[in-house]
Amino acid sequence: MEKGLSDSAVAFIRKTSIILGTVLILVSFIANTAGLSVSSGLSTNQVAFIIWGCLLIVAGIIGKGFIRFYRGTAFILLNTLIAIAFLETFSIVAVKIIDNERFATRQMKIENGNIEEAERMALRSLYVPYVIWKHDPSRSSEGITIDENGWRITPGNPEDHEASVFLFGGSAMWGETAVDSETIPSHLQSIFNDSLPGSIRVLNRGQGAWQSTQEVIQLMLLLRDGVIPDLVVFYDGFNDICPVYLSAEAGSHYEQDVVTARLNGVPPPPMMREAGNLILRASNTWLLVTSLRDRFMHGTAGEIHYDTYVDKGRDAGSLAMEIAAVYFGNADVARALGESYGFKCIFIIQPTTWYGEKRLTEPEREVLTAPYVSGDPAYGELMRATYALLVSEASSRDDMFSYANIFDDIDSTVYSDNTGSHIYGWANRIVAESLYRHIGMISPELLTEEGN
Image (cartoon, rainbow, N blue to C red; front, side, top):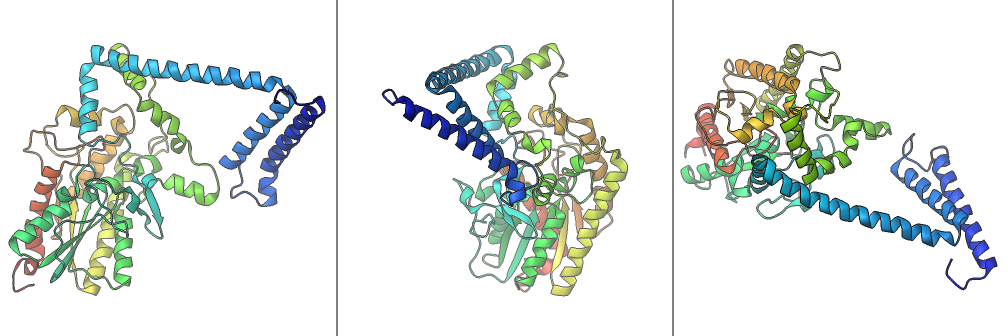
């Protein structure tokens, strides 16, 4: 529509624009029938085709007026961005004035490595057969090193060693919010290096959001490939429970609804289409809104509700029994593998804010009263009911130990973010020291020169 074009050229461009737009829209609607789409519904690409088609048709109809339309739209968008920037700045100033405690808490969490969606590790990982995901090596950063196989490194590993110990678990074992040298495996390796230099190699086999079934499958894959450890430690509890809060199905893994939707060729469930909500909740404006809400409306407005096991007609008691049965079943499988391949197993019930007698600090209490998911009483009820079963059973098994009360005598903040399961590096050391003692009980031969 450039100035100076003839009327016939303008007419040709307008007709071409309308035709192309119509073709794009038609292609998007017949894509499923023509076999050009991977799903039965409207995919993201199809929606994009429809939008571009509509824009081309509008451009063709408006003709020379499209330039004015474009400029007007751009003017509105620019002013909207300016307004958002102003609102964000105003909001953070307002929060510091009316609710400085909330602002300070958020700043402390950021400084201590808090990530609001830290538990959703599957979305930041790579697909791997059978276990579904592992960490992406390209995600390595300062203090966090992931090798080419998706495993987190353990500093201090001896090149030549007499025995190897595999440590399985979720992100707490992997070391979320901790640097390489302060993960549980790294602290345990340090203890071994001090007591038996060069004799034992500790390998971190934790992965974000993994639960016990994925860990047993990964152990089977390693054994299949001829990688046989001398001792295997499983550090679980939290991840076997958390996904079930939404799925109401014992044994389900994180993002199970997303994986199911992708394989079935349907759009993800509503919870997984909340990028906009996540961005909003990370903004200063949302921080101001929640401060005003809690001050004047007692925190009852604007809360997000997800369909949970309660909505699906399940109760915490029976569901907890099913979760525990899956966990103990996986433990039985691991033991059987150990008997066949000649290694021993230790099972640790990991600590969490929802169970135990620890005097929680203000940041730790916030996890239990969050405006969604972890603050839902039903979430806490399922956590406590399941942990009670796991801890009770652990007391009657020789190779199973509960660390649910390991921090009961510590008054300072142990839990490092809003998951209620990740802990600071110095607290990982406490776990590693307890684990070393229990290794001595289950595999004393590992801790002697003769045994190595």
